[in-house]
Length: 131
Image (cartoon, rainbow, N blue to C red; front, side, top):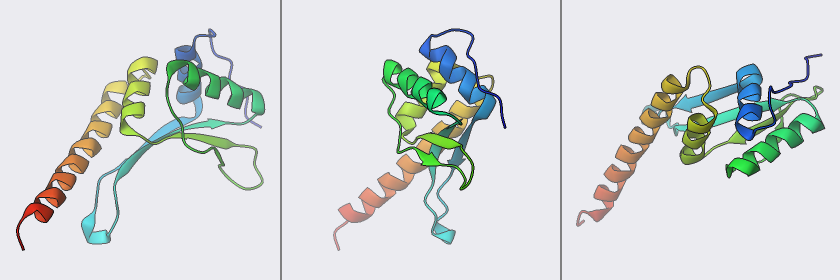
């Protein structure tokens, strides 16, 4: 069984940094229209106990960050995932928490945001044209 995470301080930023550095990850995928896949971003914080879950949720609430629905990572294991889906919340998380590879991660999130904005503007222009 994995060890419990003990942050260096009780500040919300330190709590989230400890969890992200140990068991967190960021998934960013660009749109791929040929495969009919939509792009997006998701930041995951993995917790393994109720006390860790309460610590992460309290830190997110203190910083004003919103999370998605918490779900089990795998059946039969006691690992839960606390996801953050919105690009604005993920960028705020990365600027407040400052993980080791924050500049690279911010670039990946912004690249997905730019591709999404370009695709959305193309869709709006397509609808605005007279038929």
